[in-house]
Image (cartoon, rainbow, N blue to C red; front, side, top):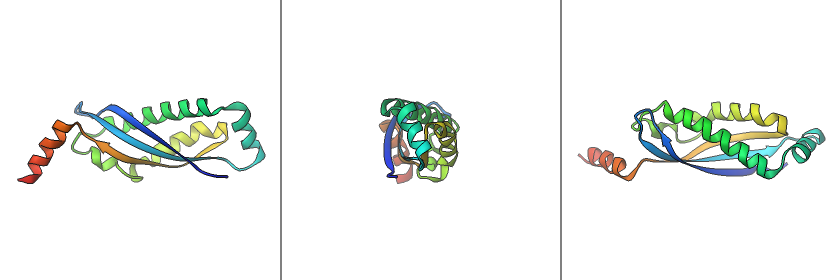
Length: 125
């Protein structure tokens, strides 16, 4: 009944204007209550498979989300507000494994140093 936090860094994620950024995503998940779900998790899934599937699914959804934003708008995805569709998508995938995704949060968005310094210079004026 305990929740687990899965932290995933995603490197070289392209924006709409082809700037490669890095993102950190934190996922809170748990095994659904009930003996049926515990058996689904224990007998049909192993931790390595769960980790790989979660990593691949998150990579794909976050890259789709970022690809729709320019490097100027990419900070707007930070937090929990923009991750509701990711949570829904992941729950559709993991329900058959007896796992519930409780929360997805984008914790960090990093632009390349040269782009970040250019933006800082513009705001300094």
